[in-house]
Amino acid sequence: MSQIRAAISAVQGYVPDDVLSNADLEKMVDTSDAWITSRTGISERRILKGAGLGTSFMAEKAVTGLLENSGTDPDEIELLICATVTPDMTFPATANIICDRAGIKKAFSYDINAACSGFLYALATGAQFIQTGVHKKVIVVGADKMSSIVNYEDRETCVLFGDGAGAVLLEPSARYGIMDFVLRSDGAGCKHLHMKAGGSALPASHETVDAKQHYVYQEGQPVFKFAVVNMANVCEEVMKRNNLKSEDIAWLVPHQANKRIVEATRERVGLPVEKVMLNIHKYGNTTDATLPLCLWDWESQLKKGDNLILTAVGGGFTWGAMYLTWAY
Image (cartoon, rainbow, N blue to C red; front, side, top):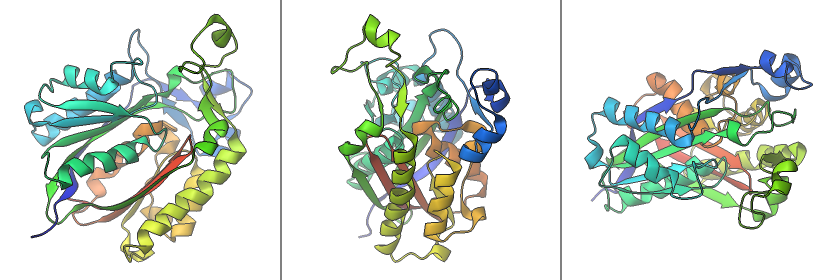
């Protein structure tokens, strides 16, 4: 009897209409289009505007589109996992809110927070429910409203992030799907990339707000060095243990943190530029949404049986790589 695998059977993305360009940022902080582009590869990013609109708004758009495009009845969904670092609120889970708004009434749902690696973690987790035969239809959504935790007076971080959401439908397959993954974490990296206040260790107060401690804090050089080394390492590890050479890989799907990090990973894996999904120039770093947004943007170019390597690194530190074969 062949092994059941969890295959991506549909993908959908959503990005807000409002664009924040490098030219716009030049008017807000001491920066320039040339500086941003050369250091990050980003030209613009999307920003969610509107009173009361949070991460669930974008995620629901992606999930609803996913259901419609795949012809899936909301009642068929048995589990929804949302990867996010910008939940609508501390509780309930943003996944719960997404299900309610998307009309998904017969599923259980929860959030995963693994920073920029969250979608990869959630995809690996959701796959287990398919592979064990427990469920037939699982949705994994990655979504973040990074503009809600970015300090637009900090020239180092405000140029990096954008808002967006992406979702995939997982279903059983006897041939295609998630073949293998390597996931890692190291809490020693917390000091380099985190949000200082707002949690139980440092609850919100007048002092924390005045000190601007509810924004992304990042030490650029340590994060960059860690990402360059470790994204490539896990890609090589998952390829080696599955006897994959660079010519066997149709696409590298990297987290869109920084174009230079992506380039370093591509060179280590030994792939040509044309085999790398790169959309950071138009979306920026959407954290948990980067990987599904890449799949959404490249969906028309993907062929059944294509070998894909997905990889990400995030605050914490968290990182990982996944080998999957495209199912449609």
